Image: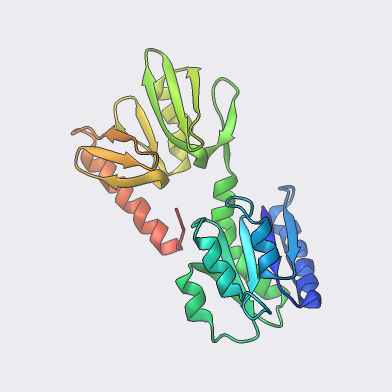
Length: 242
């Protein structure tokens, strides 16, 4: 887990780093984490790139670019990173949630508030970090899987990076391995897909985030649609982002 903290008050920045380090050490155990500190929004944006951080915590009222200005710039290139705002006033809460903020910390920030914040975002972060080891010994992040397809004793695993991992195995083995994760399902014979990567779904096909169109068989249509609807509902209830 990688975090960025942005605040032009150095003492507040270091105090938040101390609280966050203590809580992350307890909650994440041996999972490595990193915390980078930035004293102004412009310096952060010069260093920023999509995917570099899992969480960005921003003071709203700063000299130069405000935390809201920085957040808007972030959201232009990254809809997935979890944003958390902090301020001495809760008067900016509505604006922060328009930017899909995951939490709002009121200063002075307490250890309890940091723990509560992490309890809200950790389940999603942990899910993003889960890995799977394929029958050929290849290990990858589950959420990086777009879909798999089986042909003639070979499974092609299509990844979000655009890569395709090829292995000799059967579809049933892949089902037993991937379906228990909860968001990978079989829309038609020989195919498994990641619900998180669905862009659109019709009666007989699914459009994936990479532009691929996958078939939904008539026999599996009802069960598949029901599973996807349940996934969507749970996702909205948890406030998870895709």
